[in-house]
Length: 230
Length: 130
Image (cartoon, rainbow over all chains, first blue to last red):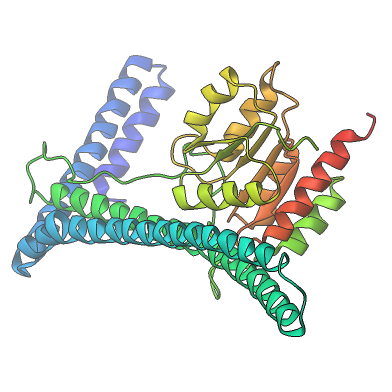
């Protein structure tokens, strides 16, 4: 403590000892104001130094460009990827539906064949047709199921977009604080939050090998639910 | 299990809604409708006469867990069976869904067999005397 700090402290104690409450309050308020002022001075100096550092490094324009152009572009590209995969998955499902229609007409061929006089080659034809139809049916079902990649990959991409938008927002705040942006400029794109309630636990989304810590598969989930009485 | 049962499928991804719809159709359930969020699903549930809900968890407007809680808190809809089909595979999420009264929980990616198994199980349970 400097000499003046010690004097001020002594002054406070003295005021208390002689029962001078008003004097005590006044001196205390004065000391707190001085403390606040010195804090403001420090913050202002740090902000100026930060702005100077950014400007000196010629990062000012670069960071601004990243925040204003490159990040929104990146987010648009990722959004577009989700759209592309959505269209592709729907197209595949359309083709699966058409495949199922074709199978139905093949089945009627099988029915017609059963009306014809029996023969060894006819029987072979019918059973080959029948097993071929069943195999195709199974393959179409699996093909349809495989399109679920689009949901999982889309969810992961949306998380990345959300993260990037968060970074963009923080960057714009930084630039604004450093005085590189007028105070009234709003971020180009707002961060999207998937969690509507700030007190809710953070959701992990689709499992990614090597990430997300201990993942649970359907068997584990069933066991857990069983233990809870489900 | 009445295959004419009216089912609502809720997921923000149109491709997943389509896959679930097709799987249900394969199992004989053709009376299905879709909603793209818990928010759009809720008025449909209040005004429709749905007997089953299949829902995702992670949706931007109203999440699946919020939809479930809202259903359980409503006098008319409280006992509506709800099956969650979601990518959320953490213990905490499963426990939260169980506590909120979910009837079944399927983790994506899933198979048609799993869907059938869970549906059978849910209705077996519901048919048991209380």
